[in-house]
Amino acid sequence: MHKPRVLIFSLAYFPLVGGAEIAVKEIADRLGGSFDFDLVTLRFNKKQALKEKLGNINVFRVGGGKLFFPFKSVFLARKLNKENPYKIIWSIMAAYAGFGALFFKILNPKVNFLLTLQEGDSEKHILKRVGILYPLWKQIFKKADYIQVISNYLADFARRYGAKCPVEVVPNGVDLKKFQIPDSKLQISSKPQVPSSKIIITTSRLVYKNGVDILIRAVAKLQATSYKLQVFIVGDGPDRLKLEQLIKDLNVADHISLVGHVSPEEIPSYLYKADLFVRASRSEGLGNSFLEAMAAGLPVIGTNIGGIADFLKDKETGFIVKPDDAEGLAKTIEMVLNNAEQSKNIAENGRRLVFEKYSWDTIANNIKKILYEI
Image (cartoon, rainbow, N blue to C red; front, side, top):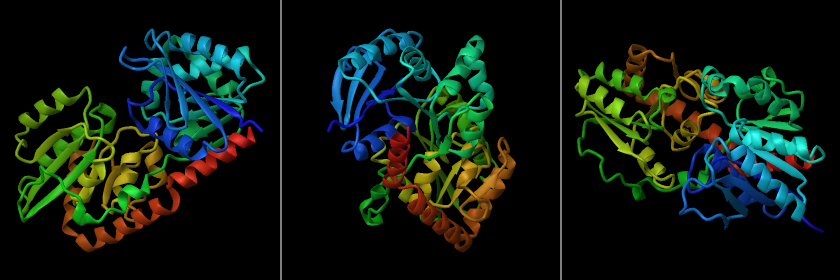
């Protein structure tokens, strides 16, 4: 008996890595015995193969840039479908990939359409980007046969923009094996050798929505503390030059290190050496970086924005601050670092939550149920 075939539309895929791409890989790795997966994605440069097998997914790439991806992807998808028909098409987000899946669905109405929402940008930003394509964009939600979202915030988002089908929350997961490594085996080569230091970490793309500038401004308000504060900002992005200038203007270069891009495999070693994780997000679809920090046993400070609210409860599993409030963030950082016992207990609650509810095995099993359902 042949396994059901699933065609995934995703604008990006490995080696370009984000939360959505990791989710697709982790799920497909676990469901390869039940489904055959193909994936159509954009060829960002000529070094990338037009076709290759990555894990349990046959990856097909099309050129032409983002604007032409919906058309080129559906052209290739129709060709693949004629060779070996698909039971399900699966779009990763309601953007370029969503348009490709929508066009395929219109041309092949009997093929079931699963839409996954992983959007982390603010609603205002998303609508601005959609622009005059708004009526067509809403059809992505209306034509879907099932919508899976990574947070309750995105479930409400889907329903507001036209979803009539079942909408189910299945969050992204955490590779828990990475967070069972003995602390003694983890090293950060750049860790300062200052006995009285406190280390804060954020793992974040350097973009406006992640509020890295608010963390920098909060640190500037904490320079008079009795301990030496060291902040590692792990990640890269288009705002790097702005943040470098802000660090210089606020005279906090001695306290803040812009580490740059770090591979997902290295992230646990940074987290284990920190005392506190902070991310002052302005918008968030879910917030995998928070979950990883919680899995590493760190106390976590975040905002009550978007999908963060699903798992971060103030003084229960972490600490909540208002967005765009550097003064409030500074006070909360100081409170957390000065109350080690309370922070440790809350961090343990957060770690327990992640290990109970955010395993990739659990997530993949829930996605399997959805695929069979449709």
